[in-house]
Length: 212
Figure 1 (cartoon, helix red, strand yellow):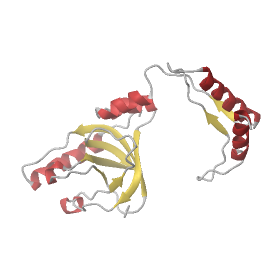
Figure 2: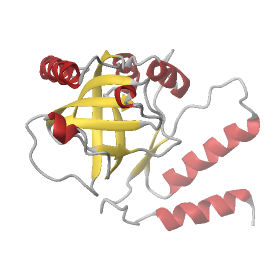
Figure 3: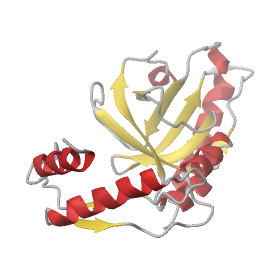
Figure 4: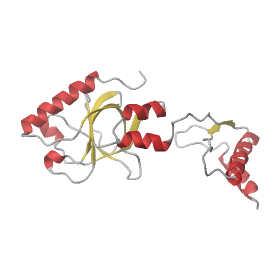
């Protein structure tokens, strides 16, 4: 069986299948391949995929390439904590998507209960620090890092959802990051830490969603 026949067979199996969300696949967006290592082989694959989907009745779209926008540029912005620049390239706020797992449960004792978000190791994560964002239609103050005040060594992603009541344990949580507020820090006392968290929460209330 030729590569083209294999591809057409695979595409035919896709047609009409329901996605996990319950939706039916109607079209596909193909990313551009105008990179320096472009070869006629890759170009041929793109054309083959495009024609294969069109022959099966799918809509095929290849959006124009935007200068300066790439996954590398987005990751570079995240590495400096510039989630605003990342949002500009993505066309939406950058998101952290993971499951809520058991944590130290220290936030509750401070008056700011946080969720402990488990993020897959190969997913992009911004520079450590405190961020303003949102999750589940609630603003969220998000701590990303190692909790140096408590001598932590493992990365933790801990969103505090403002004005939220409920148990998130075991659930999927998608957290938008809107603005970087500050670096992680070690404080003189627990009281100083709590006072800073209160300021973080107030800044989170005032933060603007990128693109709004």
